[in-house]
Amino acid sequence: MSSLTLDAAEEIIDAAHKRAQSIGKAVSVAVVDAGGFPIAIRRPDGARPLTPDIARAKAYTAAIMQRPGKMLKKWQESQPVFFAQLSQLPGAAMPIMATEGSLTIKKDGEIIGGLGIAGGTADEDQQIAEEVLASLGYELEFAAWGVAGEPASTSSSSSPSLSPSSSLSPSPSSSLSPSPSLSPSSSGKDA
Image (spheres, rainbow, N blue to C red):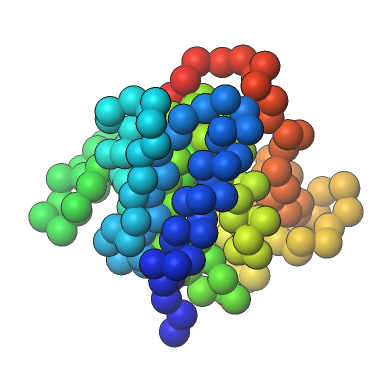
């Protein structure tokens, strides 16, 4: 069983802060272990005061739900009462946030933690998280809930497949690849 070390968490945070700075954003970053317990959380100068808590809740969600927040959104939308109650469970340490910027950290097929980024727009938080984890060699594909099988292949064609799996990208057969690079001129409200 692998675990996420403090050094690995700091590497993820450093890369996320560098990427965020390149687009003119000050984002807080949280990395938790597979059980949702904090390994490292960092709020840089200029980041809003609540962003570390938001980042931690995003990371917690990705770790304990074992799926990225963006992948959980449709489930949350279809069962809002269920999701509202999850945060009320006695063992729940943080709110469940099915949203962008919440990525499960997976290495060699094993879920080892969660990453949360808060302070940019939802799309910026998501893209920073995806780019950082991909650049550091972490896996970005996850099987669909309730479906047996392996995640979608990373070497898929552009045509859809009838594979019983899902990734974070819109096409169920395509791998999660970062969107076109963010630029300081990106528009949208900050999350």
